[in-house]
Image 1 (tube, one colour):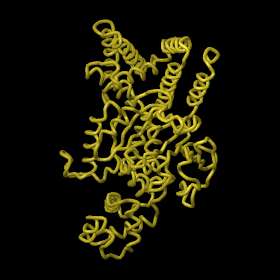
Image 2: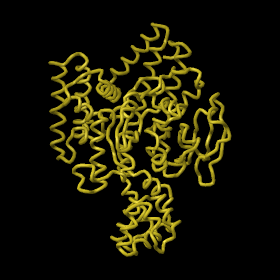
Image 3: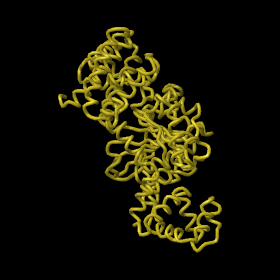
Image 4: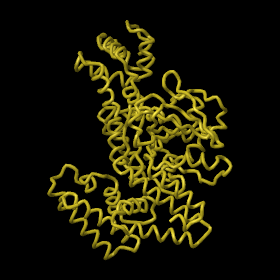
Length: 491
């Protein structure tokens, strides 16, 4: 295709090909102080992203796999300079150059988690620092690429932007800017909106949800957080595949090696205290450090910093159930209490299982946008015709399904709400039972239902659907037929 297009378009195509061969890029985004960097550390399993207030938290940082641990400071002119991690293994607080001269940071880690997933940590939306917000918006695509052509050189803009998926962090309230950021989520070169294939939201700091403020919580913090996450999903759907509660601090401490045998010993000392003293101390952070007990104040302050009161309660409950619990087992119980395992499972199911499809769809959108930007009408038509030929191939079904999801979530094609929900369900999972909405049902029922719905969507495509709806119906029909083939071993 390249000889038939101009050099500028060809260069864009080469960048698309490069990204198709690279790991999926997931941007972790959200408002200021929502706990994005803490969650990044938990996902990576190392406390490497800065979580305090400093110049590094105002920069976009991309964490990717490397054979040697290092941090590269990428300047606005495209040049790079290597800096060392600090003594604790984190990105240094000071980078030795004014932040105004920095485009973004590239962190390379010898971490297996990053072998097939690049994690992009972003500054907070809603920050008073306009430059930091602009950096985040470039990653999410909420700022037009040509909003300020002189702000970044093309190399830097290409490096910073381009996340194909987003893990969006919210706290207890979903605001208009949260929904707008997800609605406007794009890749570097094309308007590919967030949807159930490329976006997940997490309700962070779930331990701060007040059970009394959530109906049907039964007075349980985690139940309250789960109910609240469900309500937030109703607000953010269809822009996200799920909203999951998580306690980022507890997840980070459990996964990054910050929970030590000394912490476990301190918690056992607390567990041995008089019940009244212990419960009084757990009423608030101030009481926890100010109450008179044999455990040093500095030790208690350290526990609060790493676990907060919720994590301390979880650990004490585990010790009460098994006084001889080993430190490693206690750490795993804390991890279970953080909700991180479920987040990882959804990341695997929504992102990793279909990474190639997500990247291909984003690449196809980029190619389309590059062609539309061309000044040569013949070039635009040649690219359009080539895309149509590609999508007509049987092996391009996954791309057509992702395209159908984008058309539905963006409102470009309207369907009755029950049918739109069905399309989102079929395209929102790689698991056959979940695609059918019949998780836990007998295999024979799955087979029968898949064939039944395949027939229904074929009929809908032929009778009653508009041309745009018919195109989507054909895709959904084939999706159900492929599920039936998979279930019956005829694939």
